Structure formats: structure tokens, C-alpha cells
Image 1 (spheres, rainbow, N blue to C red):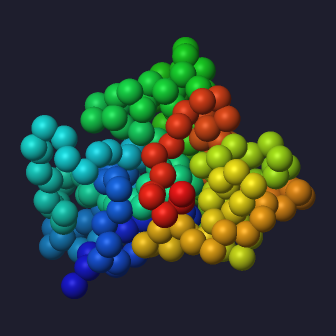
Image 2: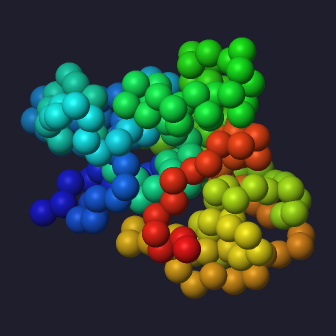
Image 3: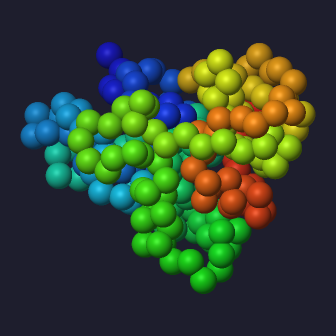
Length: 202
């Protein structure tokens, strides 16, 4: 039976078998018995590669970070995560430099925490997400917007999200759109950070 560790663009957790392109964490989410009991712990929300120097972490290990899984960078960014500074050092530097080269990791963590949830504690759900609006033409590729569900901005089209990939592209609206990806990550995308997207996006 799949564990509840697959992340959607809202940042909510689901029990889905497919793993996705990335893992990551937002602290220890399980109790002593290994059951998922919290949405997040702390403000360090990062996205990691699936394999790094042969390290192995238990999926439900108490008192250790709980591995989560993401379809790709677009989903992870929309959920409020950023690239890990260790296993994804080059991607982290590209993200940071696109925001501002003088910004440090703790600053990124605090700003993301303030931008992703309306409240910082408790059993957060997608309904707790901060949603903002932007002109469609100003949104970079890799951002995720809300229009009949989460959709990936890619060129002139918006692609619908599923845990298996992006699908059902429709023309990008010329109007303002509700944006799920936090503003700081949209700034990183606009500033040159190149997200690694699931092959279905092409």
C-alpha cells in the first residue's frame, strides 16, 4: 500500500504509487509508529535528487526527516519548496542568484514560509495556501497557476497536473491568473532558474 508522501502543487500529501523525479523534505512528519501525523515541521522545505552518494533514508523513520516525492521542479516550487543546497548545489545557486546573489538560505526559507501558507502551524491543507494574481503575459515558464485545477505555464499553453505527468494543454489566457507558485519562486523562474520538468511537459 502506498505511503502518504507524494506531494501535489498545493503542497498536500497523497498516497500514490508513482514516485516522480525528485524527493525532498519539510522535516519529520511521522510519529513513533511511522504514521504520517503532520503536514510540515519547520520552514526548511527543500527538493532533492533521488540518489545522492548512496545515502538511504527510511520512508517512515521517527525523529528523522521524512522523504516526500514530487513529479518535477514545477510541482515542488508550487508546493513551496526550493532546491537543496547540498545534493542540488548548482540548482540551488541558480535559484538563489535569480532571486538575488546576496540572499542566504535562511532568508529564502523565511520568505518562502511567509508566502506559501496563510498560517504557519497546524494541519495545513491546500485551502491554507496563499494564492496571488499576476498578468498571464508576465508569468514565466515553470510557474503553476489555478484554472480548473493546477496548470503548468509553458510557452503559449497551460498544462493540467496529474501525478503521472502534465497533460491536456490549453491556450494561455491573456487575463490575470491565480498563481500557486510563491512570488519568490516566480521571481527565480523569471530571473533565469531553469526548472527540471517531467518529460510529459514536452
